Image 1 (tube, rainbow, N blue to C red):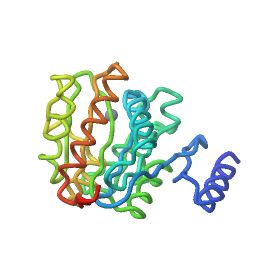
Image 2 (cartoon, rainbow, N blue to C red):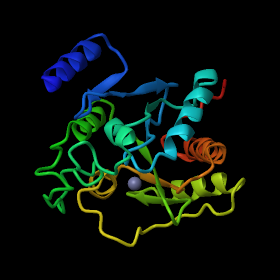
Image 3 (cartoon, rainbow, N blue to C red):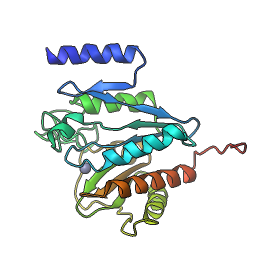
Length: 239
Ligand SMILES: [Zn+2]
């Protein structure tokens, strides 16, 4: 019943052109906001693992900034892809599935935490539909890890990762690029988009317990530097 209500709610909201791209397992709406215009099209996800909430206040600050002064490129922001996990403080969604292992990649492995099949979860499916509807030139996803802060990347994003880390590092010299996480990530969004489709994707790893103001400054500086450096950026000389 809850599923039916959630599905109807999503249908009504998306029919209204509302900012919702889907609904979580427990019926929470998944929001997406649009800022700015022009290329590149950037997609930013504030949180995908509910036990890594450090990106949420950083993305909230970015939204506040862009509400006052739009970015120089069209930007879609999904503040929280995994709202049930945020509410429950879990890594996976309400069914225990890691949304960063649930993608249709060559190395997808079905399991209790990866899901029975690729895109088996309403949250990952909502993001897959978002990617199809608004194909991004660049994706930035926020996480946190004890060994952070750093930027990891997949696809042709090495230079963009370096730009992000350099800009974020102006206020905090710990920021660096880590090209390899050092462990396998089958079915990850980075493999799906970056490795298999050539879409540059940055995995921003805040440190666990990252000071929210510092995280916000780092994200705003890093995203700004990346937008300036992206090869698809079309500069308007009248701006
Ligand atoms: Zn994570």
